[in-house]
Image (cartoon, rainbow, N blue to C red; front, side, top):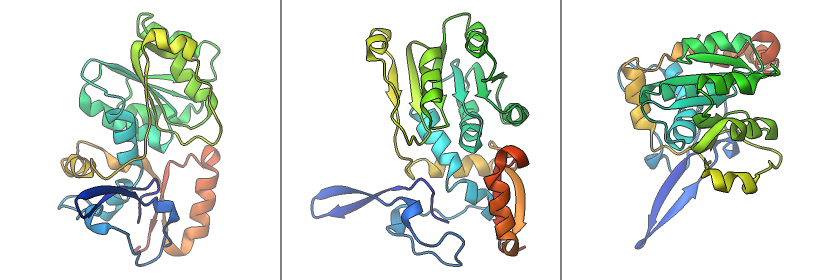
Length: 259
């Protein structure tokens, strides 16, 4: 299945290297038996022994997105305090992969209390319900008032981006992972003097090899991401469950065509 958020592909033309991006959601296929993948020679990986097709499905989207755009772009390192705003599938992927870099704290922030247990299972050390009036004070107390070293936005709405700006420490990093449909406010009059770094981007295939090895070595517990599994003939029900995630507590819904 092609990556939902696309892949970065390179093609050599004469002496120049040209970047070619083919977003996966623009490629026909989805649940088709076969899919033609453009530039597959530079973006498709063979699943190694120990990595199942089901695990490979997670590696086609949420895990590389959370790892590369959240953790790698956010420059998470040993000893950091990391806050992840949004504990949906991508936010949980950020939490799971951030732990591999040795941060001292990973704080999960979300509206849904049900997601907090899952976040802690995947590596969050602390959890804050964002609807609490004092959510910011709770986060700041966990950092002795300094603010977090890395704030990672994993929702894609102006409010959660602003939350990241509210809790990041001077000299810290805000990594935007969420896909935004509306403009966000960027208060440069405050950010410049605080020396805040902001990053964002489109996920590539550059870190897939690393993630494949981590999954093969059980360093990432992929089973925790799949909340529901359906047969192919149950596909309508599967989409219905996923569309009502707040009610059904769906995280990632797997469709097994071989079941």
